[in-house]
Amino acid sequence: MMNYLWAFLVGGALCVIAQLLIDKTKMTPARILVTYVCAGVILTAIGLYEPLVDFAGCGATVPLTGFGYAIAKGVERAVNEVGLLGVVTGGLTATAGGITVAICLGFIMSLIFSSKPKD
Amino acid sequence: MRDIIKLENAPRISSYYSVVGSHERNGPLGDRFDEFSLDDKFEKDSWEKSESEMQRLAVVGALKKGDLKDTDIDLLLAGDLLNQCVGSNYGLVDFDIPYVGLYGACSTCALGLALGALLYNSGSCKRLVSVTSSHFCASERQFRFPLEYGGQRTPTSQWTVTGSGAFVLGNEGKVSIKEIVFGKSVDMGINDINNMGAAMAPACIDTIKRYFSNSDYSVEDFDLIATGDLGYEGSKILRDLLLSEGIDIRKSHDDCGLMIYDRKRQDKHAGGSGCGCSASVLAGDIMKRLEAGELKRVLFIGTGALMSPLTLYQGGSIPAVAHLVHLEG
Amino acid sequence: MNKEEYKEYVKRRAKRSSSFKNCVFAFLIGGFICVIGQALMELYTRLGATTQNASTLVSISLISVAALLTGLGLFDKIAKLAGAGTLVPITGFSNAVVSPAIDTRSEGYIFGVGAKIFTIAGPVILYGIFTGVIYGIIYYLFG
Image 1: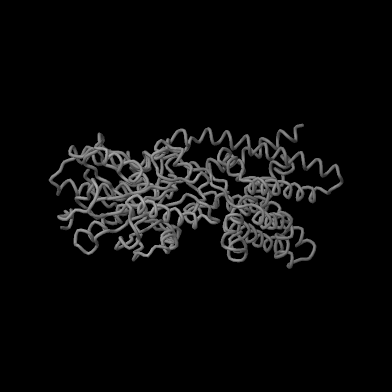
Image 2: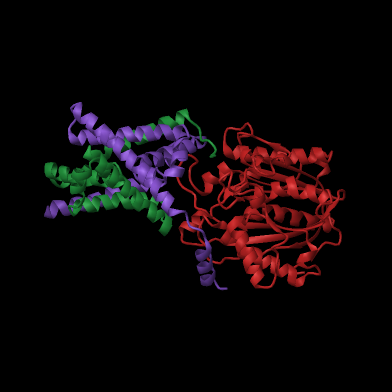
């Protein structure tokens, strides 16, 4: 049960940081996403993010910093396996599932739905 | 005259017509508009086509109301917010009337009326039509984000009005256009796309100051000073800064962007915007009150934020312009 | 009033978003999405997936749900309340891909959907992968 609590608290906290950045600094959502992904890579690189993942599980992997974590871990794995080539294959390999599903569903959704006015 | 152009041969607004979308229909002025579409689509399959259709309907309506044919009209002046003015270009191809496309962002309604009045005044045109529109969905796509994108709007952000207003200028009708002031392009360095009111207010202040410092009329002579779409934030800045310069418009000022929505109930943050905003409110509400004698003298000031996403990304700010038209019933 | 004074004046008076309320919703909804992720994670692990595969499956599941909600026109309604609570989890990435795809269908499948699908998500992939490559080089040389 503690798994869930920590996932909730850490995931929620990462969202609050982004919300504060949007409200207080006028950072646009697109910049937030980029910042989070890059921060995830860097934090993993310097060894800070992995302990958070061990501790909070999906609270750390589901936010976009987790996307950066997946890229960094993917690069590490690929470099360990195939050496220098892994530098350019690791990142996309590790995130291929998410990206592929997102773009394929994006295409399918565009076949089915049309845009609607906002309320 | 550099500041105020007085029209000796003042044209009259002989017919007018408004077309709006669902949010506007559900707003406080809802039943005053002539035509509406509850799904904002106007039976078209893209938002740009919907906007064009809205303009077409507005012109058809205004002509019908005035019992006029295409050949009775010497010129069509039209504008909208979309790139290359596609709303107007495509919407008005079916009319057998010479056509001029205008761009003045949200000030285009006042710009079209002013230019039309000048052409009438000079005798070049006997009768002409000025029409403008904006569509929330088409604008959102072009200027902001996809419609399904999950973002939050800030309290100072404005909501583009889905609406169009068409006006026939000629020699019949109760309401006439007496004076015109063309605005200057004013850039006070605002670059927040979510605070257009603040970007436009300085241009509006400049135009109003130029008018009252050169006019025979004073603020008290006007029953209504209606700005186009400054919204809540821009209106407050306008009133406060004019007051600090000794011009108190608080009693008679209203803003079309505030009139068209119930900001609280409809969750419209700082109010409406777009060149369909001032056009539909003028055609749907202000003109009717002028004709009923409820209003006698009105200053109608179209305010436009000349914003381009391209230059904004390049680090530019948002220049604005405000054109003034003096209407008399 | 010059430009700088005016900008300062506007900044001073502009009402900010009520950040406290926004933060509460961002926290609750963002946290909730992570809890769903955690539940799915445990489900997939129990079904025999390795940690890494289960993690990918969680991403795919959340992306799929967010894509469907975006198509149905519900995602932006939730996001209006949730703010960063739906933006920051992988759901925000999904919405960033799917929303321009749906929106640009009127311009056709090549220059509309195909070209615009990465308008918002493209920067995320570019800079994420690029940072990863730089890290990879460092890791290769010194790791």
